[in-house]
Each structure stands twice: as C-alpha cells, then as structure tokens.
Length: 390
Image (cartoon, rainbow, N blue to C red):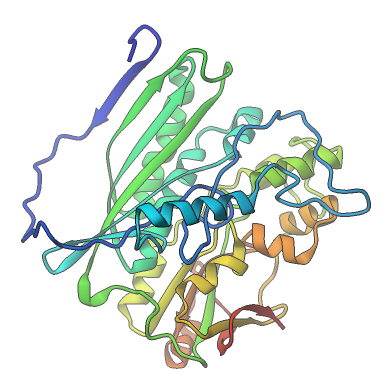
C-alpha cells in the first residue's frame, strides 16, 4: 500500500494475552456473517446487506400511486439472498447473530457491524459524538443474544482527510458505548485515504468479542409453542433502514432542522438518537432464568429476525397495540406512504430486542420491571411459520 495515499494509524491497548484453558486444532466453530441490510446477519437464507452510497440530494420515489420501499431506496434484498446462497457453499454452518468459537468450557462470541448510511445524517447534522455509540451497540447487541458478556471492542475509522476534532468526537461515542456495555475498547484503526471519501465524510466499522459458558448459551433450541415474547423498547430508528429514511426525508420536503411532525424535537435529533445498548438489561434477565431465545431487531424487523431464533415448525403471533410505536416511525410511514409490511420488515417499530421466555419468566419480568428498564408482553410462540400480526 502506498503510504503517500493512505495513512493507517493503529490504536491498541497493551494488555497481557490471556492463555486459553484449552484449545483443539480440530474444534468446530459456529459462524456469523452480515452484510448490512435486511437483517443484521443471516441464517437459513436471510442476509443482511448494506447499500451505503447514494447522492444525499437524490429524491427517490416509489412507483406511481405506491409508497416507498427499501428497494426504491437502493437496497436489493434479492441480491442479498443470492449472495447468501453463494457464501453458504464456501462456508457451511454460518448463521446466527454472532459467531461462536469454543474455548475450554466456554465460547468466544464475536460480531461485526457498521452504522450504514446513518453516517450521512451525522455529516449533515454535525452530530458526531453519538454515532460511536451506534457502532458499539450494533455489535454488542448481536453477541448478547447468545447470552455472552462483551469483553472488548475494536473499531475502524476511515476518512479521506483526517479532521482530528471530528474523529475525537466519534471515538468519544465509541468509548461511551463501551462503558455502557461494560467492555474494553481494546484498539482500532484510523485510515486516512485521500480520494476515496468526499470532504468531511468518514465511515465506521467495529467488532465486539464476548464470552459465555457452553452450558449457558442461549440458542433457541428449547423454545416451544406457548412461550411468551417480551419486547424491550428501542430508542428510535437505531442504525438500520437509513437508506429508506433518507428517501422519505427527501420526498417529504422537510429538513433535518424542522420539527418532527407530532413530536417536540427536530427530525435530525429524532433520527440521530443513539441505538439502545441492551447488554446490562439482557444479561440481568438471562441470569434469572427462563430466557430461551433472543433476537436483535435490526434490518429485517420482526419479519426476518424473530424467526431466526425459532426451531423448525414454530412462528410468532404479535399482539396488536401491545406497545406504543414511537412518533418517528409514524411520521416515516405517513410521509413515505409506506405499507405496514414494509415498515415491519425494515424498521424495529419501537422494539429493539426480543426475548422468548417461559410463561413463568414472563410473569416475573413484567412484575419486576422498573421505570428505567421497560419491557412489554408483545406476543407468543405458536405452531406454524413466520410472524403473524394479530
């Protein structure tokens, strides 16, 4: 690599390398892979892919008389599915929200992600100190679905010209996210690549690694019809679906500085709200027993993510009006004339994490919920397939 064209600054925390309890050269691992866009990872033919480059001034409209869709915004789910089929031939066994690697009597659980085109709103709003929280959240929320406690996080910050003040704000958000996750920012990479990014632009990616005892892994295999689906509220749009969000914004004629219709903050503030980090709440609930499966609701929404944790032959019945859908989603749907099914497959709709629990655990969770850690009974497991909204 020509150092005149690319300056790479590695950042690592010097710590002793832990010695594994035992390793085995022929041990098997359970892998995860995600290309951002509909689902945040993939399993059973469902892929997450990101299409992150579109002119920020472009107005994208759906077919005449129809509402906007994710495909109109430039994200092709069919292409993602085709890539899944090809990858599966090269790396059988990939699936889940995080990849599991055996280490002694435990699993290391790893996940990697970015923040998609939400960075483009950071450029426009000038809000750079929370996008790092989003970055950490997308990975730690994935690995905690296995019941893993995050250990450390690594980041990658790439830009055409390094603005030290902006980069410092971004890293500050990453540090904040790691504190919320009770994990260490172990290191990272800063890449300055002139000509690859426009002035003032950057991109982010990160990787989280956690650990869970092998006999404590949450994998969904014991889920049964009659189990209860508990939803943990989101803080907003989180960090997926922003290609569609930007299309809606362009079509609406409003700006990020305008007040959110029906709300008391600006559209920019609503959209840039940092992704909720569920690590502490989820691990606390897991420690009390009865949690059988956990799904991180990213791209793909309920439609694609909840079924990922179910054994064959089971589906979900989601109760109508069992939680309050945040104002930002109501505005997005109205302004973009987006169909219910498209909203449910693109956005979290106010529920960022789903736990599948026994009826007894559900009663305990709901009885003990506090003002700061809310939880809702949003549905139940049924015999069948997919997600039904009743």
